[in-house]
Amino acid sequence: MSDILLKIEKLRVRANGKEILKKVNFQIKKGEIQALLGPNASGKSTLSQVISGNPRYKIISGEILFQNKKITKFSLEQRVKLGIVLVWQAPPAIEGVKLSSLLERISKKEIRIPLGKELLEREINVDFSGGEKKISEILQVLSLNPKLVIFDEIDSGLDIKKTEVMAKIIKKELISKKTALLVITHSGQILEFLKPNITNVLVNGRIICKEKDYRKVLKTIKKYGYEKCKKCTLLASR
Image (tube, rainbow, N blue to C red; front, side):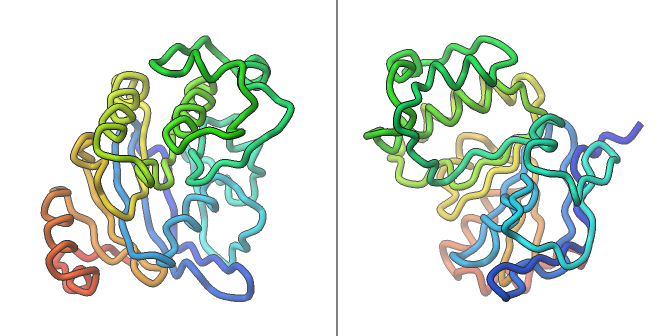
């Protein structure tokens, strides 16, 4: 039986009349941690939205498979039921709805994490700090008992101490339970705590490099920028 959880084949995606993803090939195994880095407007968030099933993005060609099942035309709700969950970079505020009420409706199990209790009786993301929004999102994700979690810029706006706290929660509640993770990040700060198995670099809508040593990628980007990644000897197949 294959241990490939998610497989993307030659995926081309358009939004607002522009092709954003260009024949992207990607796969992640059960329980694996992968990172996705790239400059702004490279297509990172688009890829996360397409995997989760956002209908705003038009798939031109290619396939998305989850546990060997073609889900390219599945709705967002269908994908959540299969176990695919996205942690938003900027989750919306929902006035009049307490976080506890939402969790009661969606939860498959009871979740308790540090700092989460004090948020339960507040309206979802209303006047939440950046860190509180991340905690709120994590609570919602964990309650769904996912198989694959996509983190879109989970470390954005967090200082190093809060990033470490977030990473500890992720390791305890997800990694220890063999949940697969795709960590999308611009800065790469959280990778020092999560230590991904594979780090991918996305530039201009293409995954141009895959590397097992995330430190090598971060060092290269810090010193030379993303242009250097285009010359990587471990080019991804296209």
